Length: 92
Image (cartoon, one colour):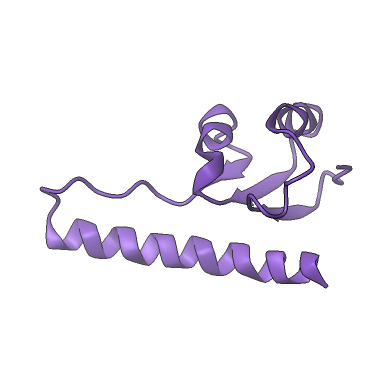
């Protein structure tokens, strides 16, 4: 996967079926300007490259307040909306 440093990408398990996480991590190391939106399955990459990789926010704990639950839902939908536009463009 060759990604330009100014490019934005959205990655899901389906989009990355032929690309290993190790290869993707190497690409992110080589291109520190690349920003990537990923789905929940790539949480490890988001933890490893916090400035480059954006994963959905973690679900709040069961004892979270109603406000925290609403904030989580709003953040998750916003991240998903950004990611899905790029996924659709990649599919064309």
